[in-house]
Image 1: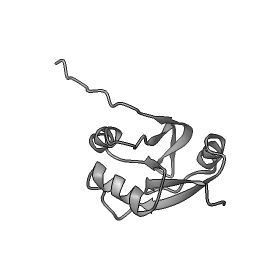
Image 2 (image 1 turned 90 degrees about the vertical axis):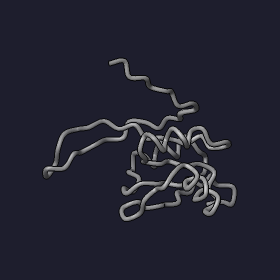
Image 3 (image 1 turned 30 degrees about the horizontal axis):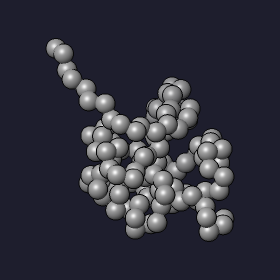
Image 4 (image 1 turned 30 degrees about the vertical axis):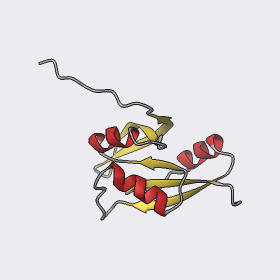
Length: 116
């Protein structure tokens, strides 16, 4: 990788799939994935994610995080996270099986209001 590669912080307990890596290659000419494995770590809040990006010198972030943290992260200045959209294929060995569909950006979190 060259020095001008886009550094992507991958925040998940799962490693990126080949399908996800291929799509990232389509989005970014040159990229490097920086893994932050959350299997035994807790993401405290959106500021924690921004701090992780700065510490690891990352330009982008692909987080698998709770909706409440996602809403706060989307509102951070200079951070426009990529999110992976997946579809559930069923179960394999009693575990859910998913397939990556696409990445998307949320540029503004919508506020949901319960009606009943």
